[in-house]
Length: 461
Image 1 (tube, rainbow, N blue to C red):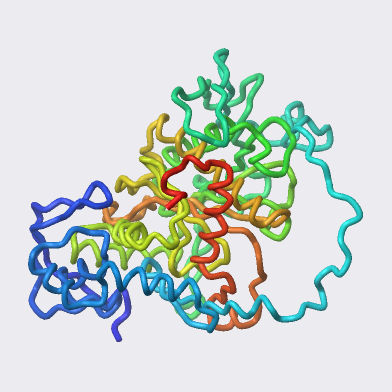
Image 2 (cartoon, helix red, strand yellow; image 1 turned 180 degrees about the horizontal axis):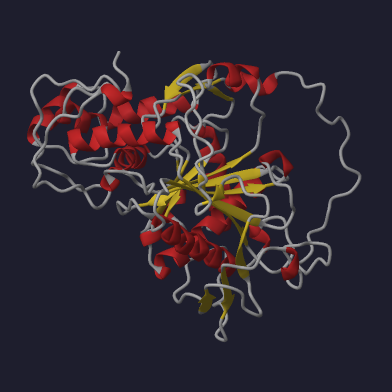
């Protein structure tokens, strides 16, 4: 079987344009007859459209649909069957090509390391306040490098909202490229960076032997301090802090996208020691690097091949299918969707993305970011309520600067609690074992979301 890099996408009409919104149709793409994509196992644009039930099909495709098992009734029956499966099975993520083993019975195995005694008391949440010993709190600015970005609420403050609902008016925020008094969110260079500064290439690391390749990796490593007050979870803050954190993500991604030699930008959050955090104060990180990870490059190639064949983003087609099947969709607004992906690598994983086709997170408007902040605050609250006390991570995926076909990409933000540990099997074969079906996780999240917002029409269906 040829590798991803050896495959060539079929030719297509240059005047055709990709779909701009989930649900829109695309025409005008022409393929070479007989070309088969051995990577995604889709033989033609018609068969591709038949696979994605949420996408409008042409007349020829409608005939294929009539003969296939992907009609509405079959999809619903398949979804119900998957949701009730108790035997082990595998699912493939078409974005990455990875397989995940789902083994629901794994949760029943004994655990000698699990605590047998309940805690003597339950910790009472206290309002966030300044901790004199924390280097990320207000008043400790001298204990970190000088800020390169900061934001604070303006005189108008933040309009009050309930249960993370979308504001009618965004908060007034003052942003500066540096320090400012009274800051609420602050970005500083990491004192212990994972990459060398982008201006420090020495040439000392060069390929010395074909079997031992080595080269410089440069870029930037930044810490986004999500509030001037001390709290471990961002859900303990007002959603306005989440909004300013997303502003920091957008502005710093914009900055690094313009730096020559930067090919990949990673934005992530570790909350809790099991998730990799070393400090309790709520914060996230950004790493911009000259290195394009192999896994990211593989995903981009798969997305590019799919768009060359169909004219649409693979992530958007997958979202259309998720919305059509509905069993893994948790909630949606006019602009954003939260769902548990079909082949989730981690138990309880929630993926957020936009309804509009949007490759670049850093092109989002202030209004969109404010709406996303409210939605993200709700999602994190669901995770915390569904799995109380569990550490969690979130990962922001945006079109890398090194991507040659941005329209093939779609930004997303993955949130997942740390319910299990990566063990020997996962390390030996790079295949995850997930004991929580995404249908079951979505059902649990929907119940929590419905409890907080019983008027939501989607949640009552």
